[in-house]
Image (cartoon, rainbow, N blue to C red; front, top):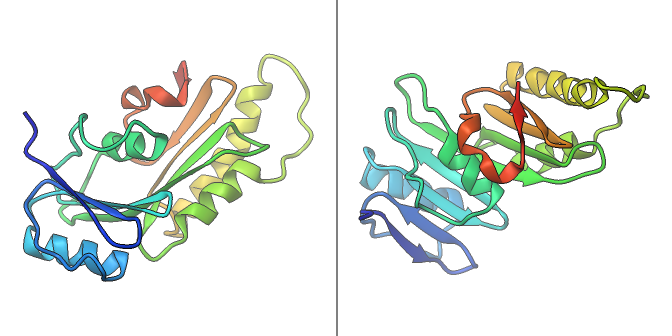
Length: 186
C-alpha cells in the first residue's frame, strides 16, 4: 500500500507527494513545490504541470514505482538515482523529434528542461553512413551534446533513444526506463 497523496491544483497542475501537505494551489508551481519541500523536507514531492514534472527528492529517497502516471517523464522520475547529501530539485521533460525517437532531460529548476529536451530530439546531425553502427553514431552525437550541457550545469541527466537503442547520461537507472522501448542502453 502506498503512503503518497495527490492533489489537483488550480491551473491544471497536480502535486503528488510522499507526505501530507497543506499548500495554496493557486501559487506559482515552483512556489508550491518549494513550500511542499519546506513543510516535509524528508519526503519526495512532484508537481506535474504543463507537460513537465518539477521534482524535489531528498537524499536517499526514490519515487515509488506505483507513483504517478505511466508516461515517459514519470518513468524518468522513478529512475533517478539521487547522489550526494543535497536534495535534488529538478525539472523533467521529454520530447520526440526528427533526430531521436525521444530525449528526456533532467535539469535544474532554473533551466528550461522542455526546450533542452526538444533541442536534443531535433538537433541537426552530421551526415551518417548507413550501417550497423549508424544508430550508435547518431546517439553518440546527441550524447556528446548532452554531456556538454551537463558539464555546463544546464542538465543533471538525460536519456536518449533511437531505433530501440539508448544512451544514458547522469544518474538514471536504465532498467526502470521500460516504456522508452530500448533493448540496449550504453
